[in-house]
Each structure stands twice: as C-alpha cells, then as structure tokens.
Length: 206
Image (cartoon, rainbow, N blue to C red; front, top):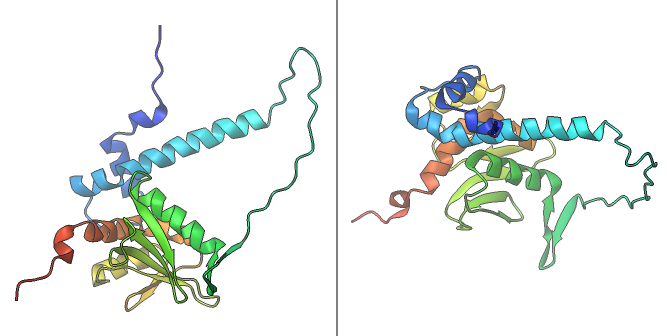
C-alpha cells in the first residue's frame, strides 16, 4: 500500500534555500537563517496546496444520487471594519491593524505567543503580551502608514528594505498595506529574536 506523505513534509533545507535565493533578501543564507524561515516556507506551501484543492473542489458540482442540491439562502455576515475599545472610545482597532497582526503571526509561527495591544497612538504586536517586548509598532496613518521595530535600522537592514520595494526613514519603515511586512520577513524575524532574548532586558550592572 502506497502511503502518501503531506507535500509540505518534503520542504527540505535545499528547497528553502532556493526560495530564499529567489527573493530580494540581502543577507547571507546561512544555516541559522534557513532554519528560521523554514516554518514560514512550509506553512506557505501547505496553504497554497490547500487553497488549490479547495478552489478545485468548489468549482465542481458533484450531484448526490442524481438529485439536485437545494441551497438555503445564507445571511451575509460581515465582520466589523473597526473595533472600538469599550473603556476608551479614542482607541479604535482597524481592519488593517488586525490584518498586520495576522501577518506577523504567520511570519514568526502560530505556536508563538503573540498578542496585540492597541493605543491611541499606535498598534503594537507584543511577545507574550509584554509591553516592553514589542516586535512591531504600526502607525496606521491615512497618508503614509509605517511600522517601527525594536532594533536599530542599520544600513544593511535599510538596504534590505529598499530591495523589498519599500522605503525607510530613520526608524520608520513605510508600508502601503499590512501584507507588505511579508516582504521583509528577515527583518521581522530579527526583531522577534531580539525581544525573546531575556539578556536584552536584564538590567546592566552599575
């Protein structure tokens, strides 16, 4: 009997290296970096295959016992575009902010304890819900939205932003849509590695 393995199990390091080499990420494709993005590549492959299967099945009408299927009208339920904080009406969580949170989770992995916290000034994606361990701060401005990360935006990282087709100014990385952070996954992973390291938050001896 032939046992078929899930496709994403065949995503090995060589495949991940190939995908990374075809991207605009300007960094050494060392083993540490390859291992850090492997879960993201596996997840992307799995979702792509699942989407193709679902799309194929949804486009085919499969009759049962020759009888026509009766479809019941369903109410068109629409998710709210904004969530207003009941304790502070000045804090409004937008659809874009929630989308950015979901994209951030897809980058670092669903198993990671990521939470979000909205404020009047910005939307924060936090590691373990700790306000001092923020990975991204998102400023959803109408004219020019941008994000900030907790690590220095060095010339190398700034060049990586430019190669991804985005722009940066000082500590700001400008994005047009939440999914733009998927173009700088290496930088987001660097920020995540920084905030999960306890040594970066210990008080230095006087």
